Length: 149
Image (tube, rainbow, N blue to C red):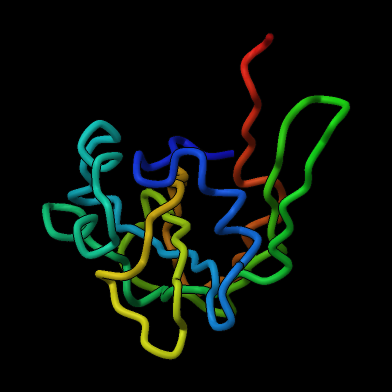
């Protein structure tokens, strides 16, 4: 589940997860543990270029992963919407320690840029990629509920 939802994405995650555009996607982006800014600082960033403009760095040797099996589900019984994705795997990842992942919305995969990626959620995860296969288990990465009437 998300550590937090970026302010720019509040109320929009389920919409973006429905992948409304012809060439859009959700992408999983690892962030290095070293230099990772606080949630209070990061949540105000409006695009991924801003996320990495300060002390926070992308962990580039592990690499970004386009999410598959992205499924927003309306749950009328529990009065919420949940968004899930399929498991993500790396065969032999190496590099600096990962401290978190950002899930971002890429509005056009034919012309992606960090300035157009909308950061949706941040997920804390301490992981040292040591060349051993690693799978990030699938499940809900986001849930939203309405306040009680």
